Image 1 (tube, one colour):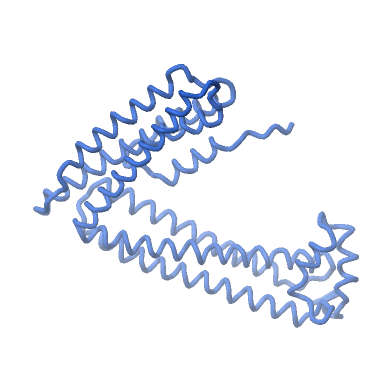
Image 2 (tube, helix red, strand yellow):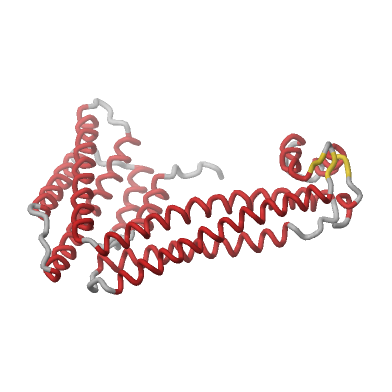
Length: 308
């Protein structure tokens, strides 16, 4: 390592030199440099120790991604034995896309770590290395968490593929959850209708929920159709009354939507945002890729910036 770290330098001196150039205050800079400090001095040994620690955290992230990859391979093998149905394919493709994203994240973090560990030859280079190593640590910890969740979900997917009872129980659970959501939004709409001056933001939020529930019902209907076909192929029993409950859900969502629209049509910013959501969701067909829908809904919910 070259520059100030080779010679060892007081952290106070380094902070003074960086403060004039960095868009952060002295205390924030001190927190960033803290991993490089030994008894008030920024040293090469402390820097290397920090790099080693971050490398180990990244190695843990790589291991978690490897474990998720193995779980994906097992689930993919199980999916190959399943019938050629959309309800299987959409799940398989979604898991594959999430795994690809994790692999890209780990590769990018490795590149960032290699750049951060290059010998810093100026106070600003030391500070940037500290910032980069902090971001690599945070990113690697996020990968560990997401990869662990993905591995767990893949194992559940494999079990779902191998058990008709699990598939049917999951469908019934999804129908029950949708029923509860419809009841909740119906109460919210009644409260809005009873108000002398319905809150525009609550009206907007209810409009978003109704649109998503409409898509949920369509997705449940498609899933039930595929799972019934799968059960018939395998000679397995299919839960009684599921399609009827989904039909009832569709009717309830329509009723709530009509009640919401009656005399409470949003205008201005909220109306424009709902129109944008309608345009996006109109292109979505079941089986629904919910990750993309969630992103679309999150974008519509964001309050537009008023900055010029």
